[in-house]
Length: 272
Image 1: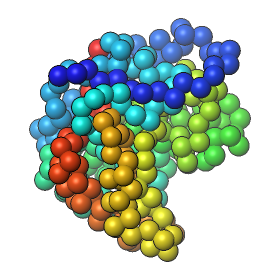
Image 2: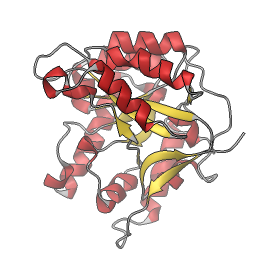
Image 3: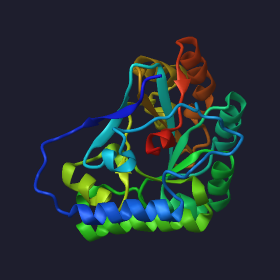
Image 4: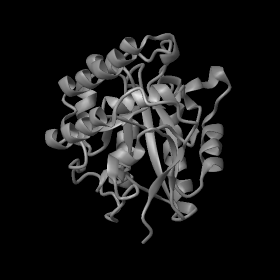
């Protein structure tokens, strides 16, 4: 069994805005609060038991990087969902994941958590990980440093108050996947690793945006490679009820299995 780590987009580093002391303190805080490496899924989800590490350093090894791919030669992939609008399609998604005994990570906005606390608890109870997707899903480049910090920490607070519990991870995903080295360092200083994605199915665009279930499945399949991180979405915008990713999920999981891939839980990357 090969160990896994994340392929990082290590862009040119500017001088650090924050000292390592703050980041290390944040890591220790996550561990002491039981929100980091100690996270374990419930019996509903059974991730592969292999010991998975990131350069033997866990969370700290993910800092200062835009993480879009897991470095491995094995046919494994991670399935993730973002949620900001509403809970449309969640019943179908959770049911399919449970039927396949497949783990996933859900990146929720704080606004979603405040409006749908019962759904936050359902995701956690099903054994999946919960990540931070900001509070209101703004463009981070348009915010001040204080505004960006507020977005991250307000979302963290909302997820905790909604009952995320031990399902909560120290993972952050930028709105619109708009990252920069400086913004990543800011997030790291708050104790979060940036986890982006290899490919998005684009199911969130809906049929009016030119997407179909077939196209969503095709985008996922075309992105398959050892360590791919797939991004999908829960909910629908502008009053829509159609959730293409919920419809595409069974076919995507079928395609993964047919090609010899297994779905792994991103939280195993935190195991020191």
